[in-house]
Image (tube, rainbow, N blue to C red):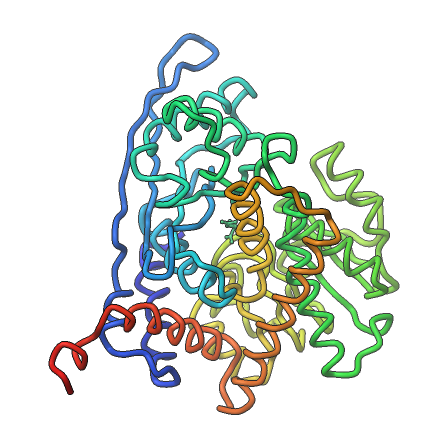
Length: 417
Ligand code: GLU
């Protein structure tokens, strides 16, 4: 991850501000995080030694509500990356129009090198270290890269012990038996899938003629592949961090998921291809679903897809994005494309606060409605102004952030102008 990921992320503020009615003070407020803490916390390892891990939690902005955003466990986590991700969460929650600001956290660790007991101790240790800055009404974490429902359960349990009361609303993405919401597990993928269905309707597509390639086979990538496949789209290629599979006639996604989950690798079908080859396939829809900066100036020229659905956060660099946009490719930006995850996190938090447990149908219906509404309004705004969907999404988010900011007054209010 390059060190200027944050500087690059906030450049989007200026390029979208001219299409927003946000006051300059609102835009200015978003140039730096409200709070970003770095923690070092000791963990006893299985061999008896003590290791000190470094982690971060950033509450970027809480103008529209408490901070919201995941915690990732990854060796490349850095303060800059966490700040960029927290900034994107601020925009994402405003795009999804849910009453949250933005936050993010991360620990520098490779969870694949930890035993299960060590993973539990890292999860609990990190929650202890950040327990003073997170909370149901201050900043609410969730899963992100290489963290899952079990990690959320440990963290919720640890926080509850510190708070002296059961506090399910402190974190979302929990197992359903611990106050999680049904439908949170595939919400990121499902939110993106509902948006592709809206686009298909607008374009009059027949799904069986639409080819899809998915780069990244973690939670979001796998479940998107499954939903698209079940709906009749032709998923022709998938890849994980090691290798990929390609069959122009379509892949059997369910069986690849089985192999991936039992062997840790996608295999057993089609022709083996690399991740770079997958990005260059001549498909209708390309879905980057792995990490940031997957498509850069070096490989953007290879991309042939007409539509890019950004299920990952920040998969296109600014330069690659500009070049791809100029070629007329439709990019459904991360802050919209993957907002299904945080939307169902919001449903989970609401249920925890109210003591409700919604049915799967209720969750799907509400998610579908929200995704369709936000997709259609950003699509319409982009077309009306002849701008790309990312600029439109940021402009809309800035308008919503400005509404909240202006409610407490900007310069005009205080100077009576
Ligand atoms: N980590 C996810 C994201 O980047 C989900 C965040 C959440 O549910 O709070 O959107």
